[in-house]
Image (cartoon, rainbow, N blue to C red; front, top):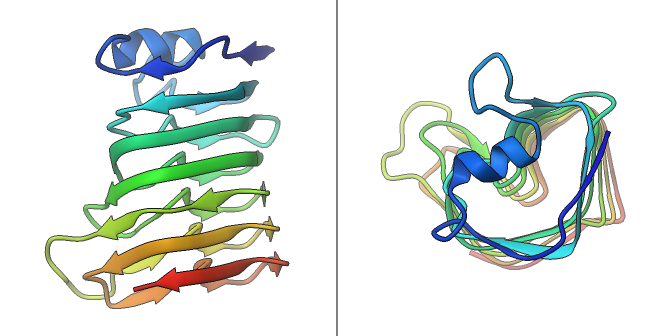
Length: 178
Protein backbone atom coordinates (compact mmCIF):
# COMPACT_ATOMS: atom_id res chain seq x y z
CA UNK A 1 0.00 0.00 0.00
CA UNK A 2 1.20 3.49 -0.87
CA UNK A 3 -0.34 6.58 0.75
CA UNK A 4 0.44 10.05 -0.61
CA UNK A 5 -0.28 13.30 1.21
CA UNK A 6 -2.01 15.81 -1.06
CA UNK A 7 -1.74 18.92 1.15
CA UNK A 8 -0.17 20.28 4.33
CA UNK A 9 -1.77 19.13 7.58
CA UNK A 10 -2.46 21.42 10.52
CA UNK A 11 -3.24 19.17 13.48
CA UNK A 12 -5.54 21.78 15.12
CA UNK A 13 -7.71 21.69 11.98
CA UNK A 14 -7.26 17.97 11.24
CA UNK A 15 -7.63 15.88 14.41
CA UNK A 16 -4.67 13.57 15.03
CA UNK A 17 -6.89 10.46 15.01
CA UNK A 18 -8.25 11.40 11.55
CA UNK A 19 -4.71 11.84 10.21
CA UNK A 20 -3.56 8.52 11.73
CA UNK A 21 -6.56 6.66 10.29
CA UNK A 22 -5.63 8.16 6.89
CA UNK A 23 -2.33 6.30 7.27
CA UNK A 24 -4.12 3.11 8.34
CA UNK A 25 -3.05 3.52 11.97
CA UNK A 26 -5.63 3.33 14.73
CA UNK A 27 -3.28 4.75 17.38
CA UNK A 28 -3.51 1.71 19.60
CA UNK A 29 -0.52 -0.34 20.79
CA UNK A 30 -1.55 -3.21 18.49
CA UNK A 31 -1.95 -1.13 15.32
CA UNK A 32 0.66 1.64 15.56
CA UNK A 33 3.05 -0.12 13.16
CA UNK A 34 3.55 1.24 9.64
CA UNK A 35 4.24 -1.48 7.07
CA UNK A 36 3.24 0.61 4.04
CA UNK A 37 4.80 3.64 2.37
CA UNK A 38 3.70 7.08 3.50
CA UNK A 39 4.89 9.67 0.98
CA UNK A 40 4.47 13.22 2.28
CA UNK A 41 4.87 14.46 -1.30
CA UNK A 42 6.90 17.46 -0.08
CA UNK A 43 4.16 18.64 2.30
CA UNK A 44 4.38 19.68 5.96
CA UNK A 45 2.65 18.50 9.12
CA UNK A 46 2.25 21.26 11.71
CA UNK A 47 1.61 20.97 15.47
CA UNK A 48 2.26 17.25 15.81
CA UNK A 49 2.26 16.17 19.47
CA UNK A 50 3.47 12.59 19.13
CA UNK A 51 5.51 10.58 16.63
CA UNK A 52 3.71 9.64 13.41
CA UNK A 53 3.81 5.99 14.49
CA UNK A 54 5.46 3.75 17.07
CA UNK A 55 7.35 1.66 14.53
CA UNK A 56 8.15 1.68 10.83
CA UNK A 57 8.35 -2.00 9.92
CA UNK A 58 10.93 -3.55 7.58
CA UNK A 59 8.68 -3.12 4.52
CA UNK A 60 7.47 0.34 5.60
CA UNK A 61 8.71 3.81 4.69
CA UNK A 62 8.08 7.44 5.53
CA UNK A 63 9.49 9.91 3.04
CA UNK A 64 9.31 13.42 1.59
CA UNK A 65 7.73 15.09 4.63
CA UNK A 66 8.51 18.04 6.89
CA UNK A 67 7.40 18.33 10.51
CA UNK A 68 7.28 21.96 11.70
CA UNK A 69 6.14 24.03 14.68
CA UNK A 70 5.54 20.94 16.79
CA UNK A 71 6.27 19.83 20.34
CA UNK A 72 6.64 16.07 20.14
CA UNK A 73 7.08 13.37 22.78
CA UNK A 74 9.98 10.86 22.50
CA UNK A 75 11.05 11.25 18.83
CA UNK A 76 10.06 13.33 15.81
CA UNK A 77 9.00 10.52 13.43
CA UNK A 78 8.81 7.15 15.23
CA UNK A 79 10.28 5.29 18.18
CA UNK A 80 11.61 2.32 16.17
CA UNK A 81 12.67 2.25 12.51
CA UNK A 82 13.16 -1.12 10.83
CA UNK A 83 12.31 0.27 7.37
CA UNK A 84 13.21 3.48 5.53
CA UNK A 85 13.04 7.14 6.52
CA UNK A 86 13.98 9.34 3.59
CA UNK A 87 13.96 13.08 2.74
CA UNK A 88 12.50 14.16 6.09
CA UNK A 89 13.05 17.44 7.91
CA UNK A 90 11.97 17.92 11.51
CA UNK A 91 12.05 21.56 12.67
CA UNK A 92 10.46 21.23 16.09
CA UNK A 93 10.97 20.61 19.79
CA UNK A 94 11.20 17.05 21.09
CA UNK A 95 10.56 16.52 24.80
CA UNK A 96 11.40 12.92 25.69
CA UNK A 97 10.24 11.53 29.01
CA UNK A 98 13.32 9.27 29.04
CA UNK A 99 15.66 8.65 26.09
CA UNK A 100 14.87 10.33 22.78
CA UNK A 101 15.98 11.76 19.46
CA UNK A 102 15.16 14.24 16.74
CA UNK A 103 13.82 11.60 14.32
CA UNK A 104 13.84 8.07 15.77
CA UNK A 105 14.83 6.51 19.06
CA UNK A 106 16.07 3.15 17.74
CA UNK A 107 17.23 2.78 14.12
CA UNK A 108 17.67 -0.70 12.69
CA UNK A 109 16.81 0.35 9.11
CA UNK A 110 17.84 3.13 6.75
CA UNK A 111 17.67 6.86 7.45
CA UNK A 112 18.72 8.90 4.44
CA UNK A 113 18.76 12.59 3.46
CA UNK A 114 17.13 13.73 6.72
CA UNK A 115 17.63 16.82 8.87
CA UNK A 116 16.84 17.76 12.44
CA UNK A 117 16.74 21.42 13.42
CA UNK A 118 15.31 22.29 16.81
CA UNK A 119 15.55 21.41 20.46
CA UNK A 120 15.62 18.16 22.37
CA UNK A 121 14.84 19.03 25.97
CA UNK A 122 14.44 16.96 29.12
CA UNK A 123 13.03 18.57 32.20
CA UNK A 124 14.98 16.43 34.69
CA UNK A 125 18.23 14.53 34.32
CA UNK A 126 18.09 11.01 35.69
CA UNK A 127 20.57 8.16 35.44
CA UNK A 128 21.71 7.32 31.92
CA UNK A 129 19.49 9.41 29.66
CA UNK A 130 20.61 9.14 26.04
CA UNK A 131 19.73 11.69 23.36
CA UNK A 132 20.69 11.76 19.68
CA UNK A 133 20.08 14.38 17.01
CA UNK A 134 18.90 11.88 14.38
CA UNK A 135 18.72 8.59 16.36
CA UNK A 136 19.35 7.74 19.99
CA UNK A 137 20.76 4.35 19.01
CA UNK A 138 21.80 3.25 15.52
CA UNK A 139 22.43 -0.31 14.39
CA UNK A 140 21.27 0.35 10.83
CA UNK A 141 22.46 2.93 8.32
CA UNK A 142 22.27 6.72 8.64
CA UNK A 143 23.35 8.32 5.37
CA UNK A 144 23.66 11.96 4.31
CA UNK A 145 21.86 13.41 7.35
CA UNK A 146 22.38 16.62 9.30
CA UNK A 147 21.69 18.10 12.71
CA UNK A 148 21.82 21.88 12.43
CA UNK A 149 21.11 24.88 14.64
CA UNK A 150 19.95 22.61 17.46
CA UNK A 151 20.03 22.43 21.24
CA UNK A 152 20.27 19.20 23.22
CA UNK A 153 19.75 19.72 26.97
CA UNK A 154 19.44 17.82 30.22
CA UNK A 155 20.77 14.35 29.48
CA UNK A 156 23.71 12.30 30.66
CA UNK A 157 24.82 11.08 27.21
CA UNK A 158 24.32 12.85 23.88
CA UNK A 159 25.42 12.38 20.30
CA UNK A 160 25.05 14.80 17.43
CA UNK A 161 23.86 12.21 14.89
CA UNK A 162 23.47 9.19 17.23
CA UNK A 163 24.26 8.71 20.89
CA UNK A 164 25.25 5.05 20.40
CA UNK A 165 26.25 3.42 17.13
CA UNK A 166 26.93 -0.16 16.08
CA UNK A 167 25.80 0.42 12.49
CA UNK A 168 27.02 2.80 9.80
CA UNK A 169 26.93 6.59 9.78
CA UNK A 170 27.95 7.88 6.34
CA UNK A 171 28.40 11.48 5.12
CA UNK A 172 26.53 13.08 8.04
CA UNK A 173 27.33 16.31 9.85
CA UNK A 174 26.39 18.51 12.77
CA UNK A 175 26.56 22.28 12.73
CA UNK A 176 25.84 24.98 15.31
CA UNK A 177 24.92 22.66 18.20
CA UNK A 178 24.56 23.69 21.83
